[in-house]
Amino acid sequence: MKQTLNQITLVVKDYDEAITFYTKKLKFDLLEDTPLSSVKRWVVVRPPGGGGCSLLLAKAADEKQKASIGNQTGGRVFLFLYTDDIDRDYQNLLSQNIRIKRIPIIEKYGKVLVFEDLYGNLWDLIQINYPNP
View: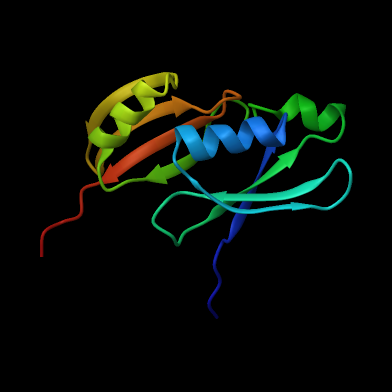
């Protein structure tokens, strides 16, 4: 059996502000933005470079969903974004005025920092140290 995690839903306040944040500030690709009704859209973004899991940006539809915006994991790191150059991406986060919660540090597995998205969800940005063959 082969399975792949394809999308994760991220509850957002507004489609357009979320698209702007992810495509302009984090430089994600907008894969789809399809109207489903007068208030609902199917919006999918993914980190550059293709492959991997994408995010379905879902506008909160009721008070319970609105309460989860920015706190989908109760304050824990929610998403883990791997990179091939953490120093480049750290500079981009700073230039985009994205809040850094923990500056880059070296761990056994690589270099990591923690940042907040536009709603306060926590992300790890990780550059893995792959062992040399």
